[in-house]
Length: 203
Image (cartoon, rainbow, N blue to C red; front, side):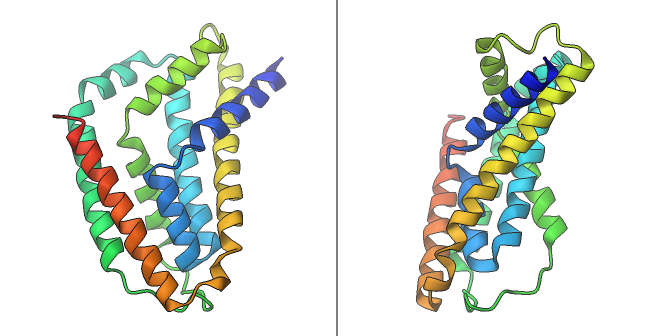
């Protein structure tokens, strides 16, 4: 029975991660410009945030969900502003040689910044609640079953980003500096648009 929860968690986590939002764009851009490891770190940060929101939904932590809901305006405002600044930074970034991996520094910072960025979308928790309710899970679960379910969510989300970064890396060596410059500019513009949408949704 608990193994079924694990499988359901994998499917849910994978499905929730598929839509290409700001984090997906960042994962693609980081993989192209800095290599697969950086893309995987971005994915791990997103999966960790999904684990948190999935846990809130699975364990029925209404205090946390109510608090996030009451503060969603400020959370999204901070998240939108962060996306704007990040997008501008990406747009202005100078590309490095795509055939030479940069020094692996700032890994921990990338991980935690991705967690914070993903958590600035409190609507995610309600998406998890809706999916759990649609599948008839999330209520009356034992702590062990809820833990198994959330482990599956984490692995499913991580699996998507593993596949995404692995697919993107195939194109990395085909890009020259001009191509990398366009990657930075396109990613920057998309992130800026995401930030404007996040802030505009509050109006």
